[in-house]
Amino acid sequence: MWLTMRQKILEALYQNKGYISGETLSKNLGISRVAIWKHIQTLRKDGYVIESSARGYRLLSAPDLLLPEELPNLGMKVYHFKEVTSTMDIARKLAQKEKETIVIAETQTKGRGRLGRYWHSAKGGIYFSLILKPKISPLQAHLVNLMAGIAVAKAIRDLFNLKATLKWPNDVLVNERKVCGILAEMEAEADIVKFINLGIGINANNEISYYEKNAISLKEVLGKEISRKELFLQILKEIKKRKGLLGRPELIQEWKRFSSTFNYQVRIITIHGTIEGQPLDIDHDGALILRTREGDLKRIVAGDCVHLRKD
Image (spheres, one colour):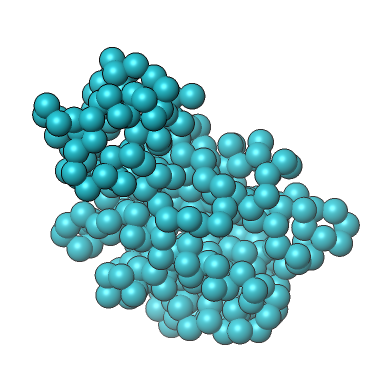
């Protein structure tokens, strides 16, 4: 109820270029002027600069929050949370009943990456999950990771003129350090995907933990804070462009153009063991084709990739 009322108050403030009186807000929203004042105070604590006078309230500036009312119509339902364990946890609960949906959090207490690893999710980053329902087979589900990586890298390149590259299967790098991690979780029947929850975490304006030695933030690279909203919307735009390419060779070719993995000897850590060698290609399902040190060719569907040295 609180979030709904806050959305209504902000919508009224945005729509009025000048002042809007507390009396008008009270009448239109059906709550007391005291309740309006309390909501205004809370909005101020969240970073909204709201001027008040005898004429009423006027919005001067808004914080860089990814609130539904701060976003244009995305054609999808948007859930926003100040803090959650993980947006993927929320998406899992929603995926059975919702259509394609976005779940956003300002921070996560138990953000996770691949293989259950902890993803540090401090304030200032971008953390969201997309509930997607593509008409693809389970064998093609890995392509969603590739699609998301392309979208993030393309958005970073276009907005900030940084050479973002891709590391197989699901990392986006800037200066060969991780700026974005991607996680996809699927539920499927024998021959069709029911849904894929796509989690994306981006080091935008957040401080990087001392323990994340291979990570970097866009703020650190650029020497200034970025607009998280601008980057978030650009990523969604790039994903939308490519959803129809899942299963088509154009998507694979674009991923290869962004990838830096083929420039390195790599170590791939899988549930079956560790393999080292030279990446040669990725196939139509997104699997990595690797020539091992012994000269064998291996097709690797999933695993952790470590760049060792440039070829």
